[in-house]
Amino acid sequence: APIDIIDQSELDNVLTFQPKACGTYTINLSIECSGCDGPAVCSEELIIVDDTAPEVTCPEDKTGTGCTAEEITSLGLTALTLSVGDLTIIDQALFEAEGGSATDNCGISQYAYQDAIVSEACPVIVERTFFVTDLCENVNSTCVQTFTINPPAPILEVPEDITISCEESRLPENTGMATAQDPCATDEVLQPT
Image (tube, rainbow, N blue to C red; front, side):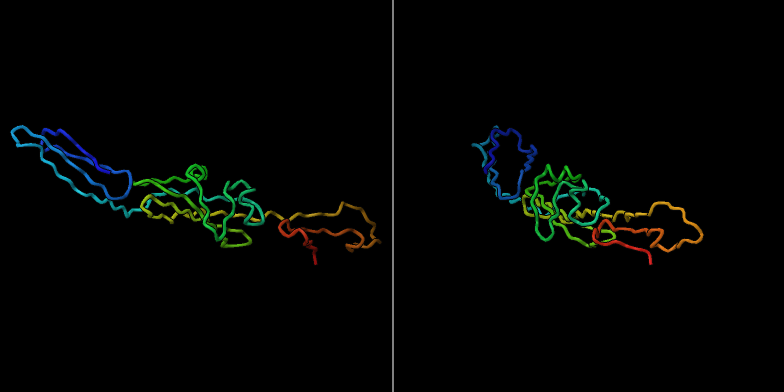
């Protein structure tokens, strides 16, 4: 888009031009001065090249108690759903709600994230990489947020206290047996050997 600056009386004035986006701009200057035959006109094409990626502040790492990677949302660690393999586009408000921020000299066009499950148990670890793209298609992908999901303690069931005589059997068949259950494997009951 042409930018016209008209009626400049001093040739040594400083001109500052700060475009809002990358691209090619034509700057037209028309300078009038006393004692001249007429206005001096010049035109210059200015190409703005931005090869600097946005600056990103990453959301803090989060820790919770659970069994699977899918629980990062239900545990309240994030409002964003697990997105393994797919790049999920979000808006600036969601990125900032997660605790992140980003700035860029030419403006930001897109926020996105992608998850990777790096450990499936003891603990479950999910690494979330955020991708912030500016208007010149420079991408910052250095922001990695880590979710650590520690397993809950086993559920222990102990038989009720009983009193037996010296002649009675002290074997578990008579006194009862303690059992433990892993909350992350609900069909598994652990018994002492």
